[in-house]
Each structure stands twice: as structure tokens, then as C-alpha cells.
Length: 324
Image 1 (spheres, rainbow, N blue to C red):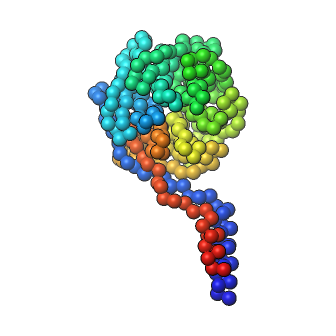
Image 2 (cartoon, rainbow, N blue to C red):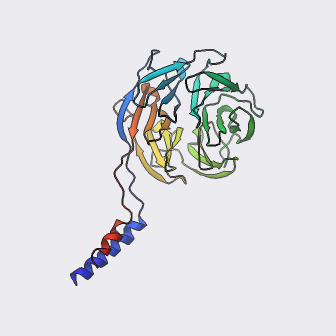
Image 3 (cartoon, rainbow, N blue to C red):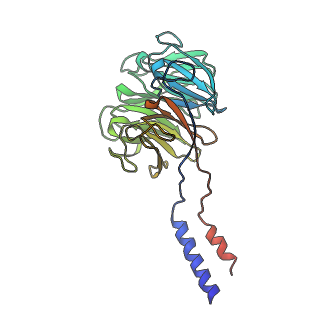
């Protein structure tokens, strides 16, 4: 009888565990680098970040009008750019992305253009001028590239997303000013994964999800500080599991969601300590799952590693078999 009762309890636990989602651990603080200034490795209101296939980290050092490149542990590797409108110069570089070949794309906000570089900062090409037509831009902020090489740009002050080829050829666009489905109130960041495009809709305090062609799919978020709410969401990044990280700028934290918008976890608070933020604004994730957060107001980058504690879904069912 005791064995029969034990088997029944184990079976009940197995059903309960199968019905519950696995625990989601918070990323663990690892290290940081940066301080305010114009020297190597210093920042002046940094914005976007991106990682290369080899694990290097690029940061859009917006106030210094340059791009800086670091190792995955914060070692300074190089920089390029200066204030101006010529090739390789910037007027508030804001967003940054790296494609599968290692090419680097930068949104040059007040020059209303995208510039493309090789992995060392060598100038390759550019596109965009100020305007509202196809391929024209008005203070673009966010940029990302998909696995096929297409480039998506958050055309922020035109309240739309534009899609281009890797050479800058216009493909399509979607969005207009407003708060309805598929409309935007300053889209500031964009991320793409598995055929879906995610957009930070800054002043609507939400994330919107679209197909790669711009068809509206879903949205989540309202203004607030509860889990799943936002105050001015900014940077986006997607990990290997398809989970979406959102820099919840006004709440000084990072939130993580499933691809369908289910809240998973949150980390960070306002402050200057390890793991605290003063306006987290950019996010990048490397191939190992490390999370790099651009801490705008603290003029630094913080690195976090996901907790690798294994989660359990169905082991109880296997234990049951041991006691038959």
C-alpha cells in the first residue's frame, strides 16, 4: 500500500509539473566597462549595441559621434567616426547592427541616413536622405539585419519601418503615426527572428510584432511599472531560444518575453551599482547568450550571463517508473 500511494503521488506531481512553465532565471551580472568622457573606452550618452559573429561588441557612442569596438569582456579594440556629414562621419549615431557576414550598419540620425562598414570600420556604402518618400528617412534610430541580409530601419520621426536590401535597395515600408494596430508613436528599435519583426513603439509604451513583410501580428504592453508594462521601451534583442529582451528605459530595467509576448522575467533597478541602470537603452546578445546592456545615463555597458541552472519539466514521470 505505501508503494502504491507513493506511485499515485508521483503521478500527480508529474501532471502538475507538465502543466506549469519552466522556471525562468534572471541573468547574472558579470562585469561592466565605460565612464563619461571622450577617451578610448569612454562614452557620452551611448545608445545602440550589437555583437559580431565572433563575439566582439560594437557601441554607438552617440554624443561622441563615433562607433567603438570592444571584446566580449570590454577590452578596447578600436573606433571610427567623427562629427560631420562625410562618409564615415556621424551626426548622432544611434542604432547599430551586424549581419551574418560581419558588416556593420549604423543609423546616422541627424544625417538621415544608414551607413555600412566592414568589421574594422572601413566605409562601404550609405543610403538615405531627409524626406518622407520611399527610402528617405527622418531621424532613423533603430536598425537590424535578418538571416537573408535584409536590413530593417526604424524610421523614427516618420513613424514607420522601412526594409532594404543589404546594399540599400528599398523593399517595402509600413506604419504611420497613431496608436492603432500597426501604427507608431516614435518607433525607436527593431529586431527580427524566425520571420517575425518586433518594434519598440516608444511613446505608445508597447511592443508590436509583424511579419517580415509588415503584416500586423500582435502587440503587448501599456504604460506602467508592473511586469509586462513599459515606460518608453527602447532597445530590443533576441536570444537563441527566441525570447525577446526589452530595454524598459523609463523603468530602469530589462524585461524578457516569449515570442508571443508572455512575460518571463525582469532584472535591474534605478541606480549606479552593479546590475542597476540609469536609462537602459541598447541591448545585444552574443552567441553564448551573454546579454550586453547599454546603460545610457551611467555611460557604461554592463554584461550579464543567463543563469544556467537546469529547469525540470517531466523528470517526475521518469521517477515514477523506478518504483513500479
